[in-house]
Length: 232
Image 1 (cartoon, rainbow, N blue to C red):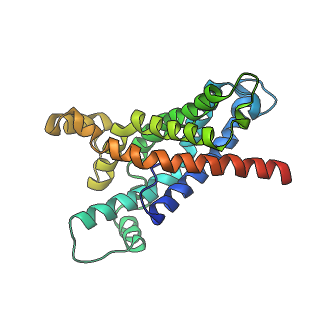
Image 2: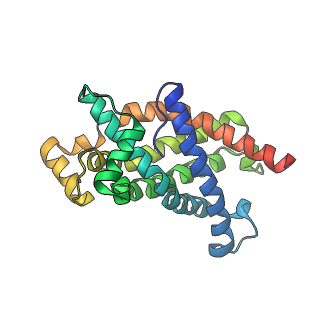
């Protein structure tokens, strides 16, 4: 789940990713509740169960996220190189399929797993832990209100990127340069050439973008869920 970027288009892309991830998360919550924790439904699972559901949800969402992020990363790289010939996402997709086949669309899938799965663990785990922390004694975390839900969403987003930013840097390098080396080797190469801090280059602005975006998205998510449970 990449951080929603500034601007309407970036926020829309982030919201789509968030929606897909949240749907997978809901399914995995039920799976964890019934098969791992022996609970009647998802509302009864533990904090670790919620984080585990996020971890499992990321496995499935990575298959849809990887090709779209591959195209996005390559287009950004072409733009930064100021390539004179404009190429559309559709044309780039055709080019990759023609040269590399369907496997080419999933270049960087392993780094995507390595980023998304622990990322979702901390994302939903941090969110649920903060909701529990902010709930008053005897109060359900579902009743903490929109402001505290926004705080929990902000903590979840910050937790995600703090935990997985190096994996995101490595994933982007693999996808942009078409590398076939292991994540470990690519990471070591970056650290040797540019220093360890290069793996965290851009973390602060990413978190600054993420905090308001995930705060709003989680409020929308919770109140949409309540509406659907009540009226559908």
